[in-house]
Every structure is written in structure tokens, then in C-alpha cells.
Length: 266
Ligand SMILES: [Fe+2]
Ligand SMILES: [Fe+2]
Image (cartoon, rainbow, N blue to C red):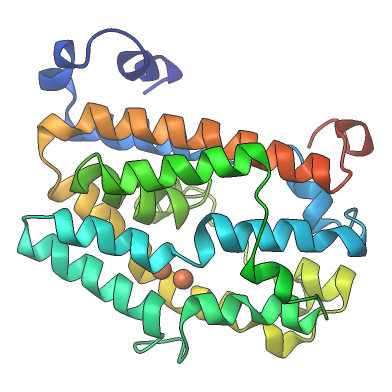
């Protein structure tokens, strides 16, 4: 299946295509959207090019834009969903994210805060983050998509888009490249910024439990989503990528990163 199928979702009135989007086409369209979830400035964050005194901008934005409230976003999908089997999957994800009760031992947002703590950042900043303009727009998109567009879009945006990566294809096809999982000592925050390894508890927890969240998320999308929601889900996914990219552009600029600093292939 080629790139061309995205055109079905990007143009024309939705109802023209509703009946034509079979589950294989829907899956491929979602995967192609997720493969767009890469950002030109990311190699600067993973390669230690962001000055240490600017790194808080990245972490406090991730915190305020989605990490702090991620369990609430999954909860919004939960309360809107009429399908008990889907609610059970969402409830399990929500419970783990909110409490760490199944795997991590602590709420995932709390584990995230070990990054700025371990790096010696001023934690007061995290209580009152001033969002950059595209960050505010992205957050508004996330709130709208998870609150006002029905459970299918809320679930897709929270469990596929936010939790997922550009390597989603591997979740459905073992021959596709997996998300890289280098040893913790090579984690960019440890390697370039001196974060103690014990502060990488969230990274560790995600490696142990996120596989289940990925499987559950795709099971919901492919086996439980009403056919009539497929086009709108892909459209919302495409909007999410665009809003996220603009958000990451703003963070890169505020961190002093320009394209000229990066290899051409990045
Ligand atoms: Fe998590
Ligand atoms: Fe999760």
C-alpha cells in the first residue's frame, strides 16, 4: 500500500469514503501518520546539543503539555466509551499511569519529575509553566480532541498518538524496526547531562509496561472502533502531528536549536 491512500483522508467530504475504508487501509493510514511523528530538532536533544541551562524548557513543556495530565486524557476516552471491553483496556492503562499500581510502583507523572529533580532544576517552574504559543495550541488541540470529539478520537489521540512513536509499525509487524532501546547509561539525559541512572525510573517502567499499552491501543483501534469513526480518527491524527510539530518547533527555537546545527540527514 502506497502513500497515495492518505489522500482519501485529506481531501473530500468524509462520507464519500466512509464505506470504503476497510480495516487494513485504516491501519495503514494510522501507521503512516505515526511515521510522521519525528522532528528535525530531536537529534539535538538526544545528542546533547541543547545547552544545559535551556534543557528545562523542553522538560517543563513536556510536563505541562501532556505528561502531567495524561491519565486524565485516557480517562476522558474512558468516560465517553459505551463498549465495556474497550473501557476495561482504558481503565487498565489509566490505573497504571495514575498510580503505577500494576508495574511502575509510582504514578508515571511523578516518575517523570525525577528527570528535572535529578538534573537539579528549579522545580517551581514546573508548577507554573508559561507555554510557548504553539505549545498552548497543541495542548488546546489535545483537550479538544480528548473531550469533544467522542471516545474513538479520544482513545486514538491519547493511546496511539501521545503514547505511541514513529515505530508503531513494529507493534503490528515484527519485521518492521522496533523502537530503539539502548542501555540506560546511554540515555541522553544520563550521557550528556549527568542524570543519575536511578532517575530513569520512568524510562525503565515504560520499557516494562508500554508494550502492553501499545497492544491494547491497537486492539481497540482495529477490532472495536466503529467503521464510521475511521476517517475522523485519521483526520484527527493528522491534525495532532501538525500541532505537535509546531509545538516542537517552538521548543527547539526557545532552546536555541537551529537546523544549521544539525546534520543534513537529521
Ligand atoms: Fe506512562
Ligand atoms: Fe502507558
